[in-house]
Image (cartoon, rainbow, N blue to C red; front, side):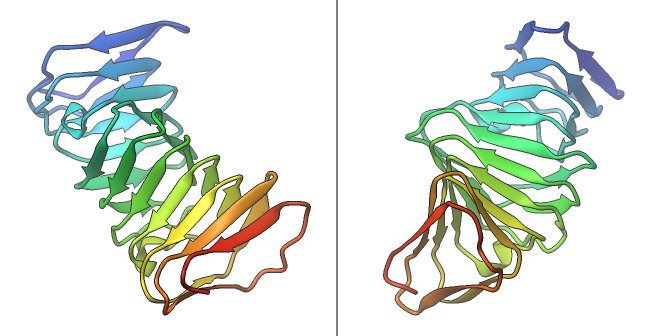
Length: 214
């Protein structure tokens, strides 16, 4: 793929590409696409609608991945780590982990202004410097783990029947925090760690606190 290209998939159809995608064009797709090969193209990937399924980061090429209203689904049964650059476009997007035994680390520095929903009965860990990302994040029936306070550089965090794990010491200030669903948990693992919520929490959702911190 030497120049920019797009893949448009007929509604309710799924396209699986087992072959290697190479060269330097930008790939833009709509529809459900499954990538399984070790792809070497360097032009970047833009997910504008629907979803892409992958089980290894090499499936996504070697350049910037842009989520612009699409769904990115990790289907492997192990732990993996995303590095490089990821951009969140103008439209809110979803990152989902399919298997409950999997854990996915996003060490990528996220950028953009759109919101991101993390879902799936599994753990997503943010470790990058996300100061260039100003979008909201919603965690739905899933677990979000923070290894650095700077990983949560966002406008608003919403837990919907989910768990927030805070690993580092020091205080994490949640200035715009909301609860939905039935029950969520904040787990502060470091004895010298703490979480400060400055919002007035309302509604019927239970908030549980666990861990060695406070």
